[in-house]
Image (cartoon, rainbow, N blue to C red):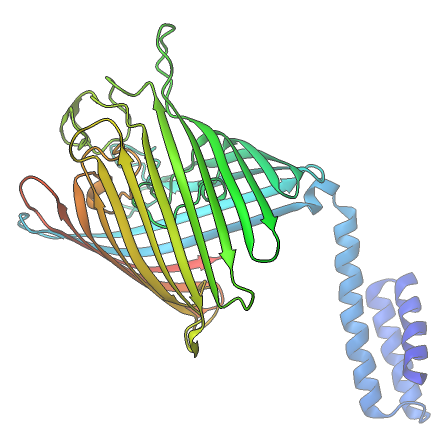
Length: 424
């Protein structure tokens, strides 16, 4: 009681005085109370520590309240990745090594209780033939310390009219509006443009249903008599977890409707779909299919399968089928991951293996993982990933690809990436 009363008096005094003067005078007051035997030395140390902590809180709260409301509701996030990359193809005389960096910075601001806007910047390889490549935010270290460039990564507005629904427009983060357990079809750096809706409704404690639907603008052809290329998609899925949270599963089916891409040449292609010839930088021809397709995605997880040493074990897979061609129309990937569910802290770890098979015309070759033979189709191969937390938000990663073409002249690629990532 004695200590509480004294603290109350001191905090009132602190609140009406300047911080430095108040703290100095409170220290003197505490020393006087110790001299008169009202407080012992340990109580004095404890009170001083609490005064310092509360003074810091008052100072931070005062600074926060002095800022505009939109600044108070703004969050910053970002990451820096340092990479060493080794690449070798069987038919090439020499291997290629690269030093690369990636920097991303994003912010989100709540406009009101239902609307937020977000924007992000990312590094770009200004020296490459395509510095606007949507499948890469790497800056290769070359050309005598050139500065590289920073590009718009995303910019969106999101409306949340109900806890079970959200709508986005602009250029946005794909993972929030399309569930995909592998990178078979979509490179992780691709942020689509257009609009999407995410609906998710819980059915009791164990089940929930979700739907992702959207229209993504792919290009503008500038012709009045021809529709601009776009993608319309819808994904319907279900999530389940058992009562003891030992098992969980997600299953989803998806339909992709591509419009206006038949008989044209898409930007950022790998030049491996039927009708195309040459390389990605000097590609000729036009697409002969429209690539309307359907697929299934699944993941099954086991929490703590071997006790505390492994937090989660999960099996995952993707399948896609293009309705148009009679051959090379399927793609699939399957794999397993185990360790910590996420690697963010010190000594956390995760290992992952994935096998991928993507037929020549299973999907447009503008979207798959660019590290798998340059984002090509007509590819199959293996991928191993290891991540380890060196410290909080400091992650060491090793990613190894071994891929080759399905049909045609064999030229197996081996690609190793060693990364250190810093998140904030």
